[in-house]
Every structure is written in C-alpha cells, then in structure tokens.
Amino acid sequence: MLELIAIALGGMVGGGIFSILGVSVGLIGAYTPVAIAIGGLIAALAAYSYVKLGVYYKDEGATYAFFKRTFPGSPFAASVVGWVVSFGYISTLALYAYTFASYAISGFSFADSEWTRKAVSGSIIAVFTIINVWSVKGMGKIEDLMVYTKILVLVVISLVLMLNSESSLPVLLEQSQGTSFVAILICASLTFVAYEGFQLVIHAIKEMDHPEKKIPRAIYSAIFLAIAIYVIIALGALLAIPMPDIVAKKEYALAAGASDVLGHWGTDLVIAGALLATSSAISGTVFGASRLVASIADDGYFPRFLTRRPRQIPVPAVLVMSGLAFGLILSGNLEVILEFGSFTFLMVSLMTAYANFKIRDKTGSSLYLTLLSLLGLGMGTFFIFYYEATHHPEQLLFIGILYAGLIFGSWFYSKIKNL
Image (cartoon, rainbow, N blue to C red; front, side):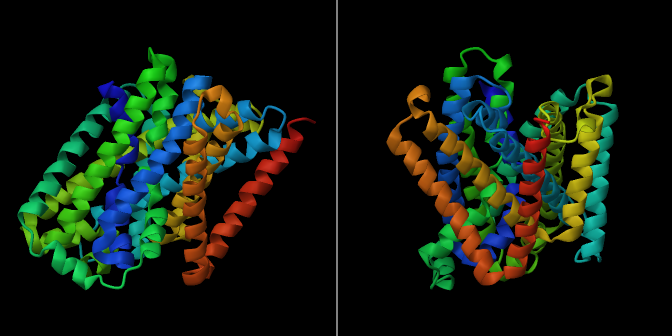
C-alpha cells in the first residue's frame, strides 16, 4: 500500500508547488492556501471517477482505456481522449522542465534570462530522454528513492519556513483584502495541474492484489497528503517571505525569498528540493507517458512509427514527446504552460467523469457524487476559459490553436484507422 501511495504522491508532488506558488500569490495573495485546498478537493472529485472506472475495468491504460471501452462504437471518442491525454503529459513535462531550469539558474546573475531558462529546460529534458532511451534498468528503484527523498526535503523546507516567519495570517489577510471567492476559484482551477498524477496508480493495477481496496485507499490518501504538503509549504512561504518578493520572482519564488530569510544554506535546501522534485517528475513522465503514446499508436490513433519498441523501449515515442515538450517551452512562458496543463487535465478529468456517469450503474457510482464531479470539473474548466478570455486573450488564442490541432489530428486518425 505504501508503494502505491508513493506512486500517486510522486506523480503529484513533482514540482507543482514550486511552479504554482508565485502565480497564485500574484492572483489572490494570502488566500493561496485556500485555493490550493480547493484545487485538491476538485482533484478528489476527479479521482472518484478514476477509482470507480479503474476498479470496474481493471485496465492499466487508465483514461484512454476507460473511454475506449465505455464508447466502443466511437473511434473518434477514443482518439480524441488519447490525443488530449498525451498532450496533457507533454505539457506537464514542459512545466516540470521549465521549473527545474528556473530554480537551477536562480542563484546566478542571468536568473531572469528567459532564453537561458529555456535552454536549460531543453537540456534537462535531453538528459532524461537519453536515460530513458539507453538505460531504463534500475530506473524504478531510483524513482522510488527520489520520491521519498523529495517528500522529506519538502517537509523540512516547510518547517524551516514556519520557524522563520516574519508575519502573521491576520496581517497577510488584511493585505489581501478585496479578493473575491470567484478569484480564489479561478486560481484553484488555473493551478489544478499541480494535482495531476494520482491516476498513475491505475497503471500498476496488473501488479496489485485486491485493487478494489487498494486503488481508492492509495489515491485518496495521496491526494490528502499532497494537499497537506502544498498548503503547509504555501503557508510557510507566505509567513516567511514578503508577498512582493514571491510575485516578482514567480518562476523561482521560494528560492528568491529564502535567500533573504534563511540565508545561503536555506536557499540551497529549497533549490535542492525543487531540482529533486522536478527531476523525479520528468523521469516518471517520460517513462510512463511514452508507453501510453506507443499503446495508442498500436491502436492506430497515432502515426505507426510510434509503435516501434527496440529493446522493448518506445524510443520514437520518447523522442517525439520530449521534442514537443521543448517546443511548448520555446513557444510559451510559465503561465501559458501552467494554464494549458491545468485546462487539459480538467478536460480529461471531465471526460472521465462523463464516462463514469454513462455507466454509473455498472461501476456502482453514486449519482450525486458523479454529478458533483461533473459540476466541479465543468466549473473549473469554465473558470480557466473565463480568466483567459478576460485577462489574456492572446494566450487563449494560443491554447485554442493547440486544441484545434489536437482535435483535427484525432479526427484524422480516427478516420484512417478504418480505411
């Protein structure tokens, strides 16, 4: 059970808090921990359908397999979910790499150089691409070690920040007066990607006994722990680091603030935690998602060359995923990547909730909880769309173009599959 919880927790706590903190504080100030907690509740609603479908189908393909089997007569449904899920993983890979780079260069004079950050992002993706292509043996044990170590480091960071608080919650809340509940909900939706990863437990369903008990326990326990870790770190950062400093250096907010509050050793600890967390997430994402891409290609919904597995390693899938992630980094900034990732996984979770609603009698799902999941995820998706339309229409256009490409690609391959 502990190993399954580690899989889910490792998937979620992959640098999420390091990438969302500055953006969240910039939007809603001291109410950031509230938004993070609400985001966790939305993730729990999403998990309800994943748990029910995972136990019912017992298919390690997770979201893609659920939709393919729930709607067997609709190739387009399976194709579009396969494309959206795959590009969701590509966006998180880009987010983790971008965050890694931001913290890796945070102590240098060129810390604010966007092109240096993007170059380092590409370099770390290349490192883990090479590792996954040439030497996957033993990666499982290394990944487990990184997961447990990064959680320990994050706990230490949060405690250190708490012990060095320079302010109090009443003062911080007073500084954030005027923040509406709608703004908090928008922020929770924008940063939803920080909880992406709990569904990785389902990929291990073939290796576990009594999945009907272990899947829900592992996923819900991991989400609860992720919420606790994120909220504690956010509180610690707000109490110890002035909010203007967090916002000004949002790409590496914790490191920038820790330098003034905790000194050199504190900054080193924060940077080490960020690099460890993001490295673990990059490794796991490249490994797991590349195999999903190859599986989808086996079904005919991706180009056939992605099915190739020399030495049982999906080399073309690894290379294409890594290349597209770097392309997304080159074409956007932290906020674009974060918002595209959150929008994508809200959409994927919404589609999964719909699939569960469709066969709720078979999965034994509560009508009330299923409808609540659809409502919560639907509202989250709407809030991101609303925020982009009113604040960053150019980013909405960019995301819209990406989605138009995904829909066209999925439609095209769903058609030629039957030729």
